Length: 169
Image 1 (tube, helix red, strand yellow):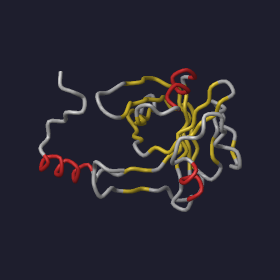
Image 2 (tube, rainbow, N blue to C red; image 1 turned 135 degrees about the vertical axis):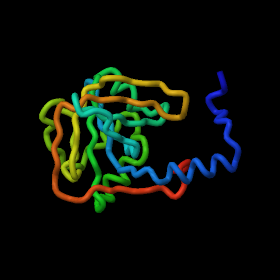
Image 3 (cartoon, helix red, strand yellow; image 1 turned 90 degrees about the vertical axis):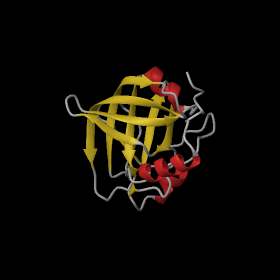
Image 4 (spheres, one colour; image 1 turned 120 degrees about the horizontal axis):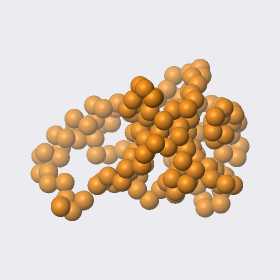
């Protein structure tokens, strides 16, 4: 088995792969989770629908993120899609919170109808999920697959973006 950091691509191949990956559109989401008395949220960009029946999504989370154990232990997560004008949420959730900080203080939340997870009122929509599968892939991110148990669309336009280089965020 090859080293997980040995992608076996030449510099030229890596450049071509990067440009092809840059054409895959992404969004900006705040991934939320809680466990007992701890709430957490982080910004994620790789979210994709994977099934219609039952409806499921996958989210890629960078390895080592503090939110991962909360999702694994609680077996649920929510995704709040950020609108193109919501700079405050984008800035707040773009870094890991301090260990005992509640990152949702100061934000208006709406009640999640099924999971009780934090949902940002400023989001343009959200999905609540029960964890179906966690995959530790040979790369720098893990995949979490969630079965959607509820969702809602609000007003506003979501952020949809293409990257200039597929290997940079």
